[in-house]
Image (cartoon, rainbow, N blue to C red; front, side, top):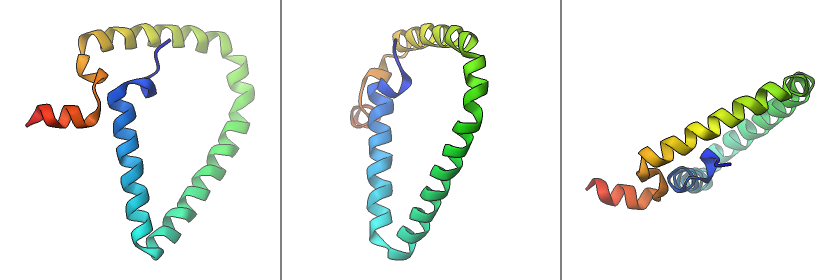
Length: 97
């Protein structure tokens, strides 16, 4: 099954954002401290949310599996109709100019 995160365009944009975020964060010690604190807070909140939601997710597992199947089919259609998703961000930027 295809995943959005496996599309070359999405993957390369995420890599680009991540590397820019890391680079900017390293340039300023105050900004790095603030970002590190925010990242820890998000990880803590995410962990708490996942642990609380897990019983609910387990009870809806059959419905989620069905929904996932339809989303994957839709993603297949989008990939066919929008071939630019199979290119990396640098290729798309080059084509735009």
